[in-house]
Length: 183
Image (cartoon, rainbow, N blue to C red; front, side, top):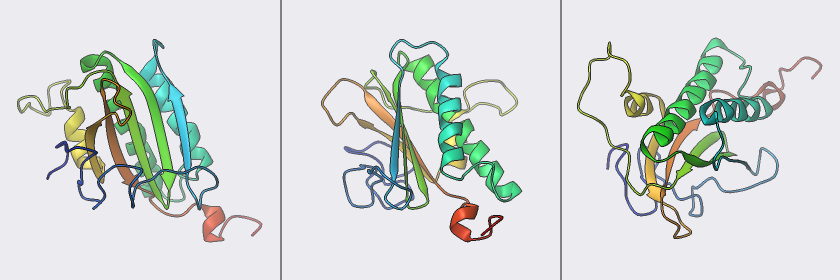
């Protein structure tokens, strides 16, 4: 299967995981960084969804040590995550009646982003477009920046789907590396 394809509970992409957070290799959990954390932002009928989701994600990335980033590459990786969140939420706004919920799952140096919507239609690329033309590049961005991504039906049987993406932490935060000032 290649990125963006759908299959039952998720997409194997390049991670080897089914993409289902309930299965081994999934990212379910709450608690501290070692055990994982889950953050949810409910969006039903909320205006400004893209900005709200970016801000919510930036706060989580700061709390989890992805921002401000120890190196320029780390900062770029965190900015890539914010761009991908914007793209997935924008796609939900344009093609799926709007996002219902954003879920961030952080565990074991990995981040999984999930955007829930009410449309059962899987994301699909439009006809190839010139990169110089505006719009229509969201899935191409995911192909290039995400470690894996895909979509799955909601596991509670409700109508709609979850579009998800996964990325790896660029490098450990300073407090885990032991090079933070005062350590």
